[in-house]
Image (cartoon, rainbow, N blue to C red; front, top):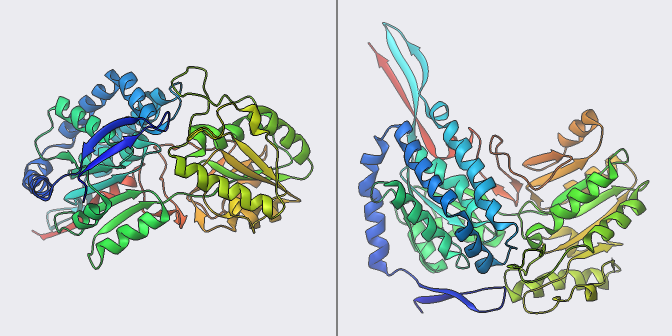
Length: 461
């Protein structure tokens, strides 16, 4: 195996950085350190763990602009947006999970009387392996890294090969915080090495964010091991625009939901169903707003649409578009209006109509700046189409009717249902998916259940 790997920036195809995969003895040393640190860290109070994590968060806030530039060069998101991954989303989730840690992890006392003590403790699992993706390298990883540490676990982080600098930033933050040795570590390792590491008996939980095929690979590598996994495997997130909607608000938010981060979001909008009574007006507004986006070098302040992560990704996205066109779909965006289109990993946004569920663009995750839009006659038709998917991460309803939206939401097969918003993770709510969007839960008080195991104590006095 070639032990060196390069990160090719989607901005200009230059080498962003070069790193080396860990050797076997390095992996062994880190797993041994994690195991050795367990007895010490589990006995550190929750309040002291919070203090360590807060200091690490302070590091991220202080270095937010530097980190933002690293994100942009590694994966291409415009610099006007990348700082907010740290100063808004990362900060919000870390602070919320710290704020609820003490209550979420406290003992559950069933009986404490002169006759008996009955209680349930939430004990740490041991060592948690976090396999993080490139598209939101900090927003996805923080969902597990901070709660795992607060719950008393060790963490070994492996970031996608496109964003290795993010793992190194975590290490720098926890070193700044004075975290005991072995409690947090990272590894730059290949997919084959990942399979070997998660088979190791010293790994007690695996949190993976990525593709369905990647999730299957993790499950296969675990074989017969009886450990839990958390899987966030993406989606084909749907939006339903009802006849009573505030049209301008729906258009504005759904264009952003479909195109932000060049559509490279697990919970980004990939398909939209619009009530026939306002379909034409919705399409007109959607296309008009889409045409205002600026596709350009992401380090330019005015850029709103950067490159997708790799040239190979352009080919996959275009294949979905071409297949839809062959089956009768119509494109509404003149890509010649976007000067960078077709240059390297730069890809103009696209809106498709005359689409149906025989097309990949409406069924399979595209993960690009593309959306398909269909007209529907009523709520029942919209509901059938929304649920006609192998995925179920998020869905959104756009309406002025709270009660009807709740009735529909309870019938939609997804982990989260939004009303009049999309593409946002509230850290107070459980982040989870159904069907091929994965299993397990992060964030909220329920997220701590995944990071701990219950242990019962029944003492007869």
